[in-house]
Structure formats: C-alpha cells, structure tokens
Image (cartoon, rainbow, N blue to C red; front, top):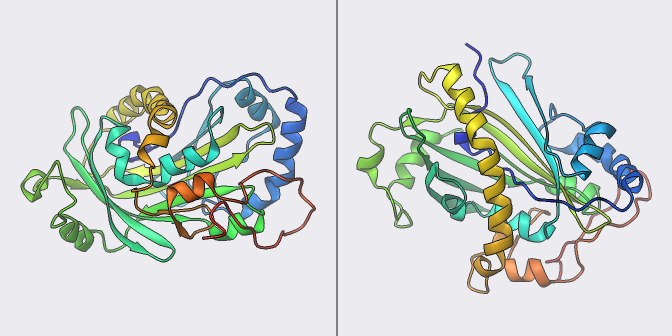
Length: 302
C-alpha cells in the first residue's frame, strides 16, 4: 500500500503574502545562477522548480508537487513559496525544534535530546484526530557543504529518522525537559516509521526569501491512505500560515539573549542574537561561477 506523506509527521512550511516582485526576470536569473548548487542538497530527488513555478511563487502562490520515490512505497510532497520575511528569523523558526508545539496543534511535545558538533536529535510527540498518538526521534542537520559551496546563498536544514530510535525514545522519556507528557502518556504510541525531509532557503536579492520544503513520511501503524490524504489536505494551509505568523509575531521575542545556541546554516552552533545581528550579513552577492570557496555567516566572528 503506497504511503502518502503525513503532514502530522512534521511537514513544516509557511505562507506569506508576498508583494509583487519588481523584476521577476532578474530573480529568475538569480535562481538559475544558484541552481547548480542544488546537486549538493541532501534530498537528491527533490524537484527543481520550473520558471513557471518560480513566477507563480513570486506572485504569491504556493507551488507544490507530489511524486513517487523510486524503489520504495513512499511518495514525497514538495512545496515552495516566496516569503516576505527576514531569512534569518525564518531559519531560526525552522531549526529551533523546541518551540514546534507553538506552531502546530498536532505537536504536543518537541524537545532537543542531544547536541553534537554538527547535528542534534529531536524527540516529538504528535496527535491528530482519528489516529493514535505518534512519536519519533529525528536526527537533524544543517548542510554545511551546500552553504560553503554556494558562498552562503543556499541554506538547507534536513532530517532523518534516527537509526536507534527506540533507544533514543526511551532516553527522551526520562528527560526533565518534557513538560506536557510522561512515559504513561505514550505507552501505546506508534513510532513514526519513516520521516525524511528538508527545508531549503534561498535569500533573494530583493530581500525576500525563496523557501521550499520536501517531506517523505510514513506515520506507521495502519492508517488508511484516505485518512492520511484527508489529514494532509486539511492541515496544509493551516500549517503554512502558522509558521509565517509565528516568525512575524514571535521570532524576535523568542530568540532573545538567553536562548540556547542553535545550528546555523553553515553547520556551526551560534547564539541566535549573534546570528541575527552579527557581521558579515547573509546577503546575496553575484555568483562568479564554479564551486565557490568557504563562506562565512552572520556568526563568523564568534
């Protein structure tokens, strides 16, 4: 039975009302210049947007595709939109998984259980109508290779289900960071069977942000496909709007001086305030062709 991507398994995305681009042709040309670096993204099978899709996104539309993943029973869902938000704040919104319960009614607990030099592990508990509680541990990264090769022009946050998920769930349930659930609340919870995904962000020369998300999920258990489709269809717009709204309304407040370090687009840990306000800024510059040298980000002087 083909499993459709379940948005209840952390399909994050955002919706913004973007102003009309002053020069769509220039932005499309910019997208063409950075396109060769896409081969370095984690999700090799993610679609490359067409010029028509880029124009539609510049006009404020969400563009989306669904496709089969060869050799598996999974489908992926991919979506993109041009957002009129601060790219740094949006990066923080997607990389800081400990506030995800503020963004989705389906996420009742989300904590970071372990940090390593180039990654972190996140435990999530998810609830949705008509289905059993789900939980998972995701291994999460920032794509340093892509960031450096593109001179900071493309940022990617990607994740996979942790290989030792049962062990990590048992450890997570002992964490003092859990505020809303305990071991007794997830005794019968189903472990998410598959969750691969990514956010790829491209700050545009006009100050806006190209944001695209890719997700391939199997929520596990025996949920019929028609329910998975129904949940995905009904949740999409609400999920997208919540991320945009939270970034605008809460990000600057949430990521204050006391906030713990977060993983920056270049794969290093940094204070959010230093990332937001530091120098040099994450600003698009004309490409010079070929594989660019190592880039530095807003936290490069830390």
